[in-house]
Image 1 (cartoon, rainbow, N blue to C red):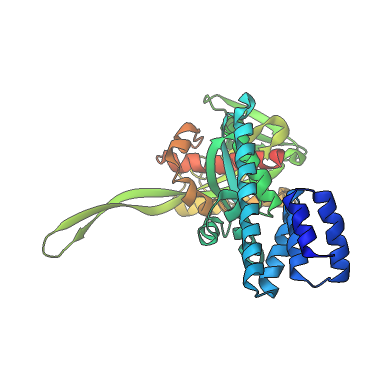
Image 2 (image 1 turned 120 degrees about the vertical axis):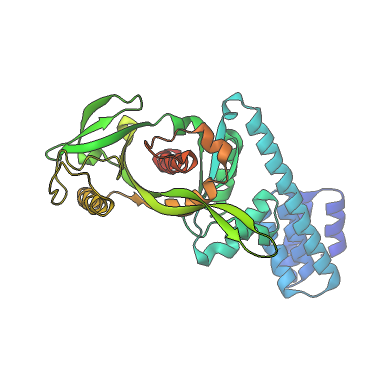
Length: 365
């Protein structure tokens, strides 16, 4: 069986005959690299691109013959071009569906160091990037807002990324805005049910009771308390440079109650430690808590919550997420803040976004 006969069958696009001839050829000459070139091409025409890619890559590693190397490289280029066309067609189809046009977010999750190189290659292929740039886009820790756009497109990218072993999820802005937030003023009781006095989004005060088993997860964050300061630089001329300096942090802690589609939010500056259950010795309740005492009581409150909810997941990597989220001010301005008496709206919206993403993440996996 000759290679010319196999080549002729390919030229006529008689792939059934080519497959039969190739099977006989490889039985007689299993190590012949030309036979493997044609085997990869058969995989190509049947759109088994993964198998074809594996053969081409193996030939590039093991063969130095210039024509074999050239054919293998051309094969990989053809496959990449075909895959790119398929991705664009799938994106166009997703965008054409009116149900898929709502604004959405695509979130990348942290990549383990041992799979980072492979993940960068997958991201580069999916997003049509070079591998070095793709590697820079992968988060080392926490979550990262990677792209905004129509939810149909974001969902499609999510499927492709997960297929490439890159953890990701997508969610609509509407889903993020449909979670109710109640600000907890204090815990009135904790057994057999927890009872909190809280304030709704319209500022109305009331009480809410819940079983601890209703809490699916917890979210913790620190919001920077910023102050603009001016540096004076002395040189040939005096220059003034304004910048924001972090003076302290506002502590925030959320409890998620998914069946009620609500979040219970606690802030250290707003929680009324002189009411309800005592967390540590209060001393004279008529004296306003100073910062150090407030932090002690806040830590006692957190310890109490952690004891009650030891088995529930805790999302506590807001700092790394917030640094990237703050680069999307137009998105944050469209989202509510739900943190009272805090002057830096973008940071409070960034935390609410982080908590709302956690709330919706499992529902969209």
